[in-house]
Image 1: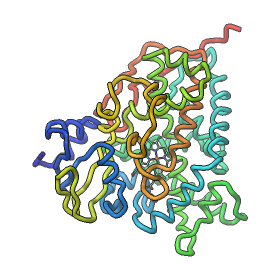
Image 2: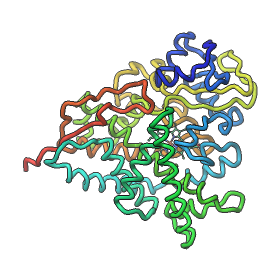
Image 3: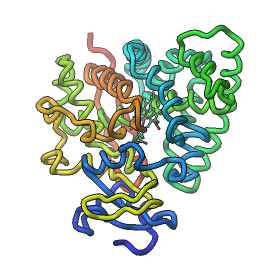
Image 4: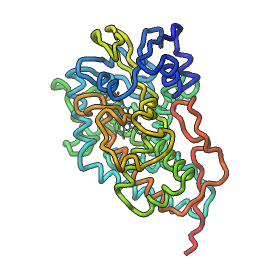
Length: 405
Ligand code: HEM
């Protein structure tokens, strides 16, 4: 048991904080304190099953205000529980888990092709920032927001800032708060514009006309939810930078992606999401007394699910620190095993409804990158686990030489 409050340790140790604490406690559930409250850290498929079990945890009292104000937005689906959550969640699953995903992947490929033509023979570009803009252009077209290129670049920058600033106090958090204010205001006006037009199947229109208990959403909350599609889609650029990192470290993966094998591409995207750090842990508050592996979890305790720890658990993933997409060619993935975007059923619980989009876009861009003749000039590709969210230090600078043809 860590008696003293661990909030500072989280800020200092980042992804390693909860795995370290659990290791020191012997590997099971670990009692601790964060944000002045009693908490218990748990890990593994059984832990994920408890975390996502109906009636076990609630979110609205568990999420730190900073995370809500930077990353999710006030009134977001992430912050809802029970029936209100189920109704709002259906809006997301209907928009994000159907056939429209292929169209978004196609738009993303087109935007990548246009952008990468401009890189040819030029100075190094930063893949992370370029991917954010590429995806922003594709997702803006896909959701139906009428923005000019200049505004789309600002949208990309602001969405990156919201993700970059959610887990820290200081300038990055301040930048995230400003970015959110600017974009919520701009998208609220766009929501109002969409309400003046007849409904269409475009996500912008569907969100603008969505009702909760017979009433349209407050325009700001509708803007928050529209951002909850746009922002995390742009955030796939984190995984694109990690995919480039993996291809640089272990070039054989680039060759296999270039061969155009769909099954291997899918396995590669799963391994990027497992291997590289993004969400460190998830939190909810116990609404009833429970037990985990014999350890009591009284009602009111904060329950932290160790996402990074579980994605590197040697019992689940042999040689967890070896990057090996092949592990996903051989195995069925259980609902509670691979949890970089949460676990369980996204329709009923809080699991991310954007996994299909993440996998489609990451697969499309990894393939395009593997096919692109390019090299990484000398740079710092180190990834500091103390920084949440983590990213290769120089954001993957790459050079596309003049075509030899
Ligand atoms: C929820 C991760 C991409 C939309 C979540 C959760 C995680 C996550 C960890 C929380 C699960 C929980 O609270 O139990 C990620 C990562 C992504 C990604 C690492 C890669 C960039 C996306 C995309 C979309 C999306 C592309 C939409 C297009 C959402 C929404 C929720 C969510 C709306 C809230 C779900 C709820 O509370 O019911 N995501 N996500 N995410 N994600 Fe994602």
